[in-house]
Amino acid sequence: MFKAGCAEKVLNVPLFIELHGYGFFAGRRNLGTLGDLYCRAFSFYDGSNRAMIIYTDSLYVNDDYARELRTKIASKYSIHPEYITFVATHSHSTPPLYRSGFCGFGIPDPDYQDYWKNSVLEVAEKAFYDEEEIAHAEAGKAPLSQKLGKNRVEVEKDITDEHIRWVKFIRPDGSCKILLHSHGVHGIVMNGPFYKIASSDWAGAANHLIKEEKLADMPLFMLGPCGDLNARYTARDIPEEKNPHFHTAKLYIADLKKSIAEGGRKITDLTIRSAMKTVRMPAVKQTVEELASDAEIFRSIDAYEAERGNRIDEMIMRIKRGDDLTKNRDFQVLRIGELSFLFVPGEYFIEDGAALMERSEAEYAFTVTVANGNGGYYPAEKCMKRFPRPGGTVRGFGYYEIYGYPQNHSFKYPDNIASFVADTLLDIEKNLK
Image 1 (cartoon, rainbow, N blue to C red):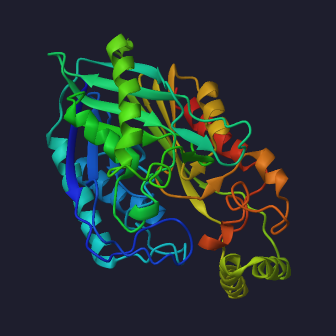
Image 2 (image 1 turned 180 degrees about the vertical axis):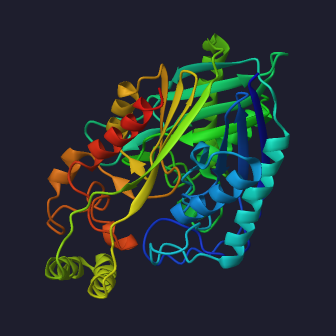
């Protein structure tokens, strides 16, 4: 017998706490909340294996925090750590959830960090005890009637995510307990006049409408590949909207409802399998002299880019004292029958994410980004080759995704990083047979 449980808690965001996103030293001290932020937990049990997914309205969840809480949850509920996942909405209007690194992108508040950790443990316990029978699942893919995103890297081609991937977990009485939905668009709707307002952004608004329209007891959003996709409609684009996050959400929910009404594929085999692999990320290991040269290039551009040079200075100090600046990231695949969730610990571009889903062995595959931590951007190889060196006459989207590496005291990724991510996940999936 397959069972599922869920629980949620509203996250109260204190006034004047800094918000995460939009660049160096923005000073985005929270002036209020528009659209509740949530921490949610989802427990799935097939009679032998139990998986748990922790959802948070945040830009991402730091790798260290995910590992720390995964250990606590695993020991308390006898869940294998490899079966516990952390996902985030990637809203850029939420408090930071990281311990260190990314200097200047929002100062973490220790009290909020502790509050969030306690909230995770609270909803995990409630979801565990909320488990009830699920008769079957139903999966489908909703085509969008209009684009919700725009490609900021390849503007002319404007390739975006054209579908909403969804799964319903249905009780024996036919009611929907959990509606999992996935789409790729950056959570930056709440910009402009809402720049200093805490918000769960368009994905949080979509979750709100799912509950309001009784499509499910609980929504579970998983961010699709969108490292190169901005929201088409933001507060700057629709200044007449009092709640701009609902503009995108309403268009999204209309297409989702239509697809659900037309029906999806019934799935009765809900056997759970999961595996996680901690991977040392490949890196272009530069010498101290090469890094110093790059730092001067960044400083020659403008005051904003000079901050990357400052971070490189810090990297050089760490290298000289013997620190290892390569990073470990947690890659995970969760299978529930013919559903396969390929969790990317960072931001993936749309074409690479779509290709990954096509290469998956599962009938219904999901590329889920900013999961279990954040390794930054994993740009497409053609993008990496377009900007072989920092600086130059062309900067902006497509460039900073590559040259943001000093922010977290990391080396630059090699050109084939997107292929490395895909191959790592597909290898994990293959071994789950």
